Amino acid sequence: MSRPRTSDPAWVRWTLTGLALTALALVIVLPLAAVFVQAFERGWQAYRDAIVQPETVSAIELSLLAVGISVPLNLLFGLAAAWAITKFQFTGKNVLTTLIDIPFGVSPVISGLVYVLVFGAQGWFGSWLSAHDIQIIFAVPGIILATTFVTFPFVARELVALMESQGTEEEEAALVLGANAWQMFFRVTLPNIKWGVLYGAVLCTARALGEFGAVSVVSGHIRGQTNTLPLHVEILYNEYNYAGAFAVASLLSVLAVITLALKKLLEWKTSQERI
Amino acid sequence: MSIEVQHVRKVFGTHEALKDVTLRIESGELMALLGPSGSGKTTLLRIIAGLDLPDRGTIRLHDEDATRSTARDRQVGFVFQHYALFRHMTVFENIAFGLRVRPKSTRPSERDIVLRVYELLKLIQLDWLGDRYPSQLSGGQRQRVALARALAVEPRVLLLDEPFGALDAKVRRELRQWLRRLHDDLHIASVFVTHDQEEALEVADRVAILSDGNIEQVGTPEEVCRRPANAFVEEFLRDVNPRSLNQRVS
Picture: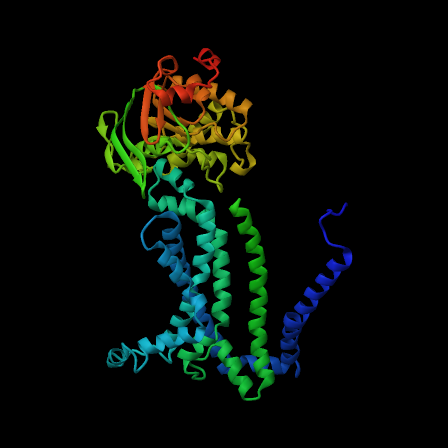
């Protein structure tokens, strides 16, 4: 195999590759390995004990609940937003595109505080909510709201890019052939974007599981009630329960690795879709 | 089935794509919309199909006002410039699509759908390609599949947007003649958009020459060549090989 003439000399390539790999090892592989080493420091039994604790189990359940509600919601919102942005021309389209990116732009802490300002006891709807005995802040609904807000852009952004590259010709062809709007969506649009939808859902899930800042503000850290997995890790850590903290952290890490693998697979699938 | 375009105007933002266009295409006629890019020919085709709505003017299909009816209700066959085949469906399913999406009351039985699709596959001489996907086909094959898909619903008019634009010269030549014969067998009104003078003069019964949102002249290929209506038409047709008039396929 002949080397392209424009490529750099061997030592440059090796140095650059070496630097990149060292950085990768220091910043990513080492800490990830440390999580598992710490988690299993006192053996498998201690690891298992840390995870089956009722407070940990309830944190797992709450995290799964938040994911189970926020991800489907964001799939729906994301599909609707991407559909509107890519298939129609309307005034305010740029505003909508910008609004979608807001959760990426603002710090998660702000995202949480916004909900406290709106729904908290001193907030705009605070007195009304307490009069009707509805609690959002320091309760599960607040956690779900904050998670949904923070993870909103993932599905929408992925789908806007994908649907823009695909254009509207196939939809127009379906219309001319007599399809109604539902048939057009389910027979033409959705099959064309299905891997993109899954990709967005995977990213959204990963972020929802790991969300700390926004959830931390609205949660109130009530053990066994409003503690998600990341919050629980922090509590255990602050109590010098390192084995427990790292055991729970290792759960999140495993989920992250699975997500990464899925993401890679789906990236490959969507790249095929774009052709 | 005739097509009538009356005083149609269409504006995109600040650009006046069609100014005041009136055109009648008779049943059984093959009409070419010829003009340089940006002259409004594709816009006119999309308005006839119902994919765009005119700002002013009316569209009549078979002497019925169709201006307000949707693309779905107009029963037109439309072949897109880049074919717009459904990429996740096989050739067979692409062609069957228009039949499958019909409401239950008018949808043919599965057996009739299969028969109809094979009939069309034979017509486009690709009956061995039914289970392929669009990405596995050549440009000329895609073009013919797009045509079969449009014909499956037995359209009242056939509209083609730059049907040969993306093909190489030899395939283009074959498909032109094939389209001409196909049109003669179908007895419907057909309109195709092209920027290629020779193509228009060689295939069409009549040619409508557009420039800058206006129709400059409508006539048979002989008429527009021998008696151009104005300086633009004369200029636009000047470099055409005179042989293309004699090479007409019939």
